[in-house]
Length: 302
Image (cartoon, rainbow, N blue to C red; front, side):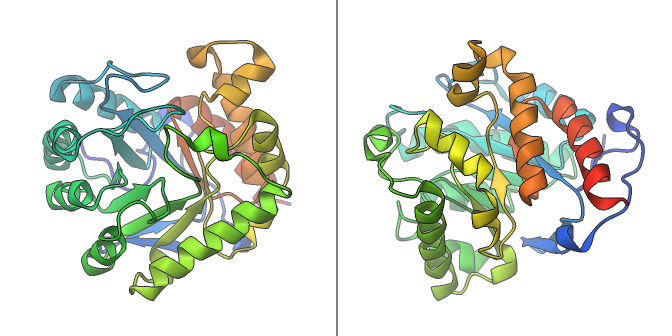
């Protein structure tokens, strides 16, 4: 099975993508590939961890992870986002060697089997280097390049695509730092600082995607505000990725556990799309793909 940087033909029964709109034009440059942003781009979540909040412990062997990768791609994922360290609130850091052990064999295996852009979710330059050597072309850094001073120069050197996410502190302590007078304005300003950090070392502008970090150093109420005011993040001028998938702020509204938050995740993604988000990091790819197909049609057709 070979899957490119778009939904496989016939995936989820939605047929070919329909028209684009200037608001959703352009490409994301990543490792020599140009990922089109003319319609919603979905990153399928693959956590190779024993302790992630939603699916921890499910994909701890390469074979199990490959089966899950094939499912995500068949459902319409454009990119696989692979993580070897849980960054849920309160999570402790994982040693670099253990994180590499979790992600590198899978990345090597999936790169041999599928033609799909691979993203590694890490804050550590040594893990990012090993992942890029293994076939990843994107680094999704939840610290916005702040955690490891070697990360930004590495990504500039390797020409990787970069996701700069907003977070304060460490996952173990970040919820203690969720104090804002104007959450959307402060997140936008701090993401602007992360962008400046990236550009200063030579990372090209068209390699950068920004992520407001829903659930990271934010209360449930602050997450609601970020979704309502996401346009203020969009005005930074970089493609915006959102990752609301199955998170606790959705559970707070619905009173449901992570696996039963699919509809809430879809609602958050559609609202973000209407505000200008281009990329969506989700566990439930098929449902998100179908919903975003409809929202994209409404947004881009008279």
